[in-house]
Every structure is written in structure tokens, then in C-alpha cells.
Image (cartoon, rainbow, N blue to C red; front, side):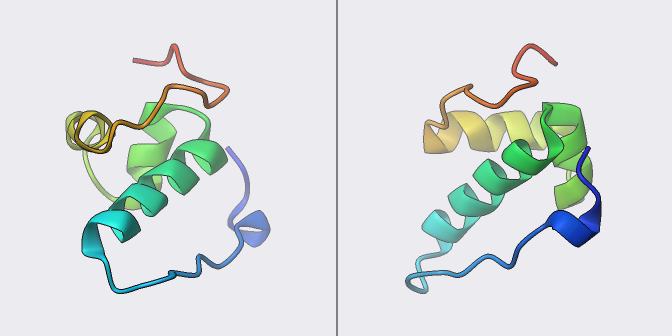
Length: 68
């Protein structure tokens, strides 16, 4: 997993909560590399992240995609 020092700020284009949630999930998956690591970064369970991945139609393209 990438150290917190390498995480860049996330800039939102609008106050669209669904878009913000999707962006946070995508960035956590990119930084964490696996569902397990991304869920830890977000402070949610793996199952909760998996539901959000399905809800937002996030493609499994991060490098640790076979994690769970």
C-alpha cells in the first residue's frame, strides 16, 4: 500500500454526493491496490466497499483486482 505522504488531495467538481463517493472509492482502490486495503483507507468493511463498487459500476481495473 502507498504511504499516506504520496496520497494527493481529492478535488470535487460539484456537491454531487454520489459522484464524491464514487471518486473516493476509485482513488482508495488505486492507492490501496486491493479491496481490503482500500476499505481500510476508507474506514469501511470490505463488504461495504464491494457494495459501493457494484452500486457505482466501478470496473475492476486496479492492480490488486483479484483480492476478494
